[in-house]
Image (cartoon, rainbow, N blue to C red):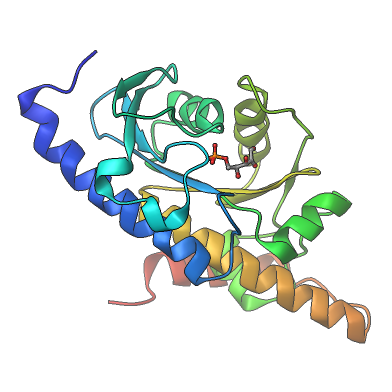
Length: 224
Ligand SMILES: O=C(CO)[C@@H](O)[C@@H](O)COP(=O)(O)O
C-alpha cells in the first residue's frame, strides 16, 4: 500500500496533528525522554500515522512522523515506527470507532498500573470522562499484538477511554488522537487526586445512577 496523491494531503494534515499532540505529553508531565507515543488512524484507509521509535520529543515534527498499515508495516517515512505500533494497529483493526491511541508512562497512572488496581470512580471528573472505574488490563510483553489484545479485551466491558496495563502504564483511546490525548491528561489528573484522597482516608464510589447521569451530561451536553 502506498500514499496515493488522493490521500497525501490528508496524511500531511495528520502528520502535523500527531506531531502537535506529541508535544502535549511532556507539556503535561506524562512522559520522560522518549517514552510514550501517539497515533491517528487515517480515516477510511487501512493506515495510521505514528511517531518513530526512540526519537526525542524535540525532534518530533510533522516530517518525523511515519505511516504504517494496520499490520504495522512501514508504508511512508524514514525511520522505524514506534515499538508500540503493534498495540496501536491491533486496536484500530478491532475497533473501527477508534481514531486515536495514546500510550504514556505518566507517574500516578503508572503507579496504579504497577499495583494492578483499578482507579475507583469516586470523583465527578472520573464519571464525566471515564464513566466508571478505570480498568486494569493484563500484563503483556511488547513485541506482538498481546498488548493490543489486552487493551481491546479490557475496554470491551467498560465506557472508559483509558486502560491501566498491568506493570506497564496507561493506554488511552478516542474517536480521534486529540480525544485520546485528552483522556491521557485527565487520567493522570484523577490518578493523582484519588491517590491523595486515599492518603487522607477511605474513599467511597459514586452511585451507579449518579455516574450514569454525570457521564451522559459530560459526553452529550457539556461545552459548546
Ligand atoms: O513503553 C514502551 C514500550 O511499550 C516504551 O518504549 C514506549 O513508551 C516508547 O517507545 P517508542 O519510542 O514509541 O518506540
